[in-house]
Image (cartoon, rainbow, N blue to C red; front, side, top):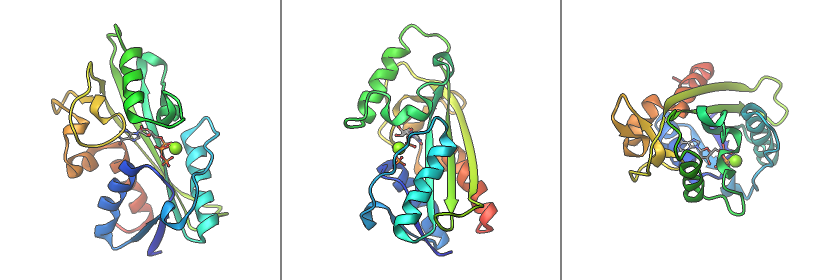
Length: 196
Ligand SMILES: O=P(O)(O)OP(=O)(O)OP(=O)(O)OC[C@H]1O[C@@H](n2cnc3c(O)ncnc32)[C@H](O)[C@@H]1O
Ligand SMILES: [Mg+2]
């Protein structure tokens, strides 16, 4: 398998995937480059949404497809926004800026700031693949009291890493991949595929 379609329209994820996969000589094409529209994400679990996205892109492209479903889960909010992270402040249109503002508002006066990112990656070799390759990762930190930093995407300007004394938006690509939910999941996925 040397060509893959990435079943995502999130520019931040796509940047991270190209950093991770290009050095391995895997040719990647994005679903939007092939004119494939976004899949529905109607499910309440990350894994079901990731499978739906991967199968959709593979069916329409005829290629193996890699999907990522991810989000941030905040302890004090009972795990929200979770699977709804991309559309926390509404989906017309989805906006990282408005999501972060809403999260800051919802966390006003909350002292327990613990949160984790979760990512599940699903690779299907063909649309009806009965044995999708599945890998997951978690990354623990805290929700900051204000936004900071220019790197990353999504909730990164709010995700505080106490051990590093940094926001995840202040990490380089390499630093983020070494420890992030997506970096961990990718490492496991590549082990399954015997690529790395
Ligand atoms: O479904 P696709 O097309 O891949 O793009 P999406 O943005 O809708 O992606 P998800 O449905 O998986 O929603 C995940 C959201 O969680 C957030 N998120 C996930 N990983 C993140 C990361 O590494 N850094 C910052 N935010 C992240 C970000 O807001 C995403 O929009
Ligand atoms: Mg999505």
